[in-house]
Length: 448
Image (cartoon, rainbow, N blue to C red; front, side, top):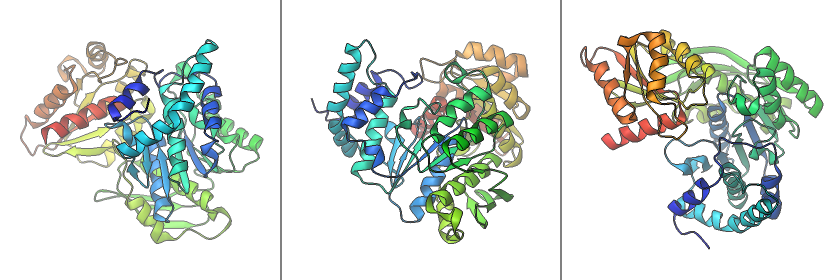
C-alpha cells in the first residue's frame, strides 16, 4: 500500500535493522538494485569512506562540483535533526512529496527482496540498505550529473558499495566501530579500502603508516594510481579569517590560492585539500590545467557543513561538533585552541555506549574547564552517571556536573559560562555524538 505521509515512511524504515549493525553481505541491496535496473550505474559516483571527515569532505566536493554547473546528488549519514537531510539534490534536502513518491516506487521491489530473504532465514533489508536503495533511485530519476555518496560504515560491505565509483576517496582512517571493522588500524583500513576495488581513481587523505600501506596496496591491485595528501596534493598555507579560514591549496596540477572556507579547524583545511583533489580527478584536471580558480573559490565559500564546529547561539557562544572518537576529539581540541579566543570552555558531552568514552574525554580534557555530562536521546546512549564517573576521574569532582536531559545540560552549561559575567569570554561546546548534537540543535531551536 502506498504511503502518504513521512511519519509512516520513517516508521517503516525504523522498524528495520538499525544502521549501526552490518552484515558482510551485499546480496540484499544488490538484489533490490537489480530489480530497479541498477540506478547506481546511470550516473558517475564519487564515494567517500574513512573514519573522520567523510561528511565534511563529501559536502565540500558537492559544493564545488555544483559551482561548476553540475546537477548533484548527495547522500550522507547520519542526520542531525531531519532525516531528509540525508538525501540532497543540488544542495537542498529532498522534499517530502518527492521522497514519498520515490519510496512508493521502490517499495514493491524492497518487499520482494524482504520476502525472499526471510524465507531463506535471513533478515529484511536494514534501515540503511533500504535508504541507500532509495537514494540511488532518487538520483537516477532526478537525474543527476554526479552523485557524492558517503559510506555509512566501513567500505567493502557497506550498502553504498554496490556502485563503481569514478573516484574513491578515503579520509583519515582511525579506530572506531572496532566491533564490526576490526581492532587495529590495519584491519579497519582493509575494510575501508573496499571502495577502491572497482574505482577509476583514488584520493587518499592523510593516513597512519599502517593504513597508508593497506590503501596504496589496494590501489595497486585495482590498477589505479592514488593521489595522496602530502605527496600529490596538500596545503601550502592555512590562516585564520573572519568566519573561517583562508587556504592556499596545492592541487594535482597547481596551486589554488586565496580559498576562503567558512569552517574552523586545521582538519577542515585537510578535508578541503582532499575534496579539491577529488574534484580535479573527476573533472580531468589530473591531466590538464588547474580548474577555474574563481569557480573553485565559490564552491568552497558556499560550503555548509552542519554540526561541525557550528555556532548555534551567542551570549555565550555555543558550538556543536559531532566528534565522537579520540581522533575527532583531537581535531576538536586543536580547533578550540587555535580558532577561538575563549577564556575557558564548558563542554556538554554525551556519548554512545559503543564508543571509547575514556579516550574521548581524556583527549578533550586539556581544553575543558568543566564537563556537563548528559545522555543522547538514543537507546545506545551511555548513561550520564557512568560518563560522570569517567569525567570525575579525569577532571575532578568539582569540575563535573550531571544532567541526563540534553536540554537541561545545555542550560546548566550556559549558566556556568555566565557566572562570571556576560562578557567573560567563556564558550560552550556540545559534543560526543551526532545524536547529542541533534538534540542540542533542537533544544536551541525551541528557545528561538
